[in-house]
Image (cartoon, rainbow, N blue to C red):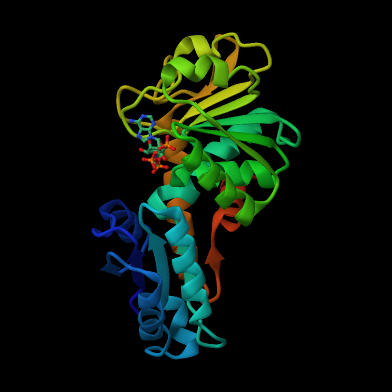
Amino acid sequence: MRKLLLQLDSSRLPSVFDRVVAYDAGADEVMSYGDITEPDVRDLIHGCIFTRGPKDLKNTAVFVGGADMAVGEQLLAAATKAMFKPFTVSAMLDSNGSNTTAVAAVAKMVQTVGGEVRGKRVLIVAGTGPVGIRAAGLFAKAGADVCITSRKADAGERARALVLKRFGGSVRAITMPDAREAIRACERAELLLNAGPAGVMLVPKQAWANRPGLKVVADVNAVPPLGVEGVELMDDGVIKEGVACFGALAIGNLKMKVHKACIARLFERNDLVLDAETIADVARELMAPKP
Ligand SMILES: NC(=O)c1ccc[n+]([C@@H]2O[C@H](COP(=O)([O-])OP(=O)(O)OC[C@H]3O[C@@H](n4cnc5c(N)ncnc54)[C@H](OP(=O)(O)O)[C@@H]3O)[C@@H](O)[C@H]2O)c1
């Protein structure tokens, strides 16, 4: 039976990236819908769950994407609400690569500090986008003392509220109008992640190099100029200036493995919901040493 993935994207143009990965991960057909809002979801899900018998429903799955994290959360909730046993299909949320990218970055950073971040000070620069919000949530849930930066106080507060509502924990927001303010913002960080947009350098070398207490710095921006000055795309835990460094392609390689493994798992059963925590479980399995 053909594996069908329903792509519900909150952005006008459904993500081509997500479609390509879906095909590469084993979907036979991707049915892509853009500009999706909450009221659209129920009938689209009914189209999935009433067309195949319960035993065959594992061959249909739902992928929620788009640039807006809050809307993505609403769409996933509406999708799962529209299902009922035994008429369920598996679903995954990954707005703008948020969960898979954040999971990959956080997994590498946490592993570097010995697997425990409880009480550790984590700074997420430009942490108000989908990737930053999810990374903040994963760190907060693990007990870290999380701080996100934004150029604007209100955007920082909105992101903070979103993270706290979904993950709980300890999260603050501070304003960092531009890269010149990074030195002050990074002062007390033990782990530092740049989650800023493509092609914007937000963390100059002065802000992180040889900074006492700072153990790891990571950047997810793969487009020059890179987000953290001095951290190269392929850095994969290399120590520079006393700090373990992770670049966007090293993180991206793990992200792609996680993303593909998650899509493949959607088609193994008909009741899986893959969101930040469950996607992190998949990453842990992939990263576990092979016997
Ligand atoms: N390596 C990978 O595998 C991978 C995968 C997916 C995504 N990514 C990358 O991950 C990063 C984060 O993605 P995202 O979708 O979460 O980011 P985003 O929403 O595009 O940007 C994150 C935040 O950056 C701030 N910002 C926007 N323009 C800015 C500017 N010109 N100067 C300073 N700050 C600015 C905004 O925060 P405020 O308005 O609150 O300041 C925004 O909320 C991007 O670089 C993306 O390309 C990497």
